[in-house]
Amino acid sequence: MQVEVGSFGGVGYGVKATADIEMGERVMRIPEKLMMTSETAKTSQLGPLIARDRMLQVMPNVALALHLLNERYNPKSFWKPYIDILPATFSLPLWFDRSQLELLTGSPCLSDSLQHVRSVGKLYSHLHKLLRAHGDTSIYLYSVGFYYDDFVWAVSAVMSRQNEIPHERDETQSKLALIPLWDMCNHWPGSISTDFDAELRTCDCFSPSAVRTGKELRIFYGARSNAELFLHQGFVYPPNTGDTLRIKLGLSSGEDSVTKSMKSRLLTKLDIPLSGVFHVLAAEDPFTPQLKAFVRVFTAKSEDLQRYGA
Image (cartoon, rainbow, N blue to C red; front, side, top):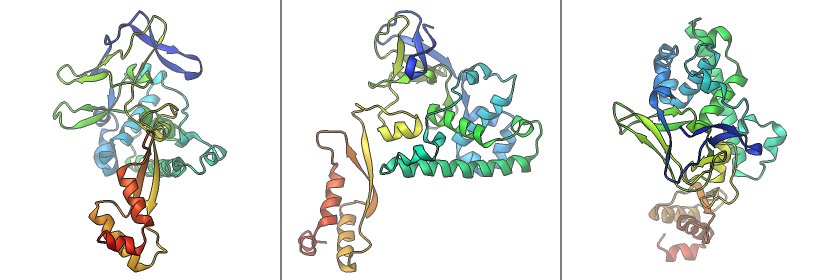
């Protein structure tokens, strides 16, 4: 393997080349047996707990976060070397104080960030009660203690690092995985250069560019808006060509019933929601056809609506 974990100034930790790497060269092959997954959670100490709780069954990301935290408390964990190099803190909105959240005023990210905080609080309350009711003192989460700040850490680690891999029993199904070393790679725009070998059960990463010894190897996380990167990875990339702005629009509740009914019929005919999230793109033409059509209907007069057959 021609890479190792390294520190890169203001970026923090990343993956460093220990030898010259050519573009397209395979630089990592991570076996599934080294990964922490939503399936290893079920075969761990937490298996009986997951089996008795519907929420943990339908939210594998939460089960994986709980699994990660339980292994963090286990001094003899198989994954201890991996867990020990995970960040102690994250730049996600979950970690923001009130003054930092207030800086998001006017951004759609504010409501999403607050929703994340509320959701994690509810999850913690539910899981705290579940662990107490379960009463298995052999579980590290029970014997050491289940603390909110530690749960936020585990949720943040999973949120910023989780990836889907094909299930071994059915390749049409997937499971969540934390992939050691590979998930230390930082983001760089380009194209996907990682694949999962379903036969060998390995995560194979190929270098998207030539990298010289001592330099950082970066990979493309996928097409995501800056809002998505901010909420789930804790950073933004200003020249992001795949960026979008989410705006919430809906028909006015103060409009007279006849006009509103005409607009509703026309939007339904056009297969456009009466209210919802629309996207403004970082492109030469930033407005999607759906957004343009909604705005035309939203601002139309009664006579225009009649002419359009509403």
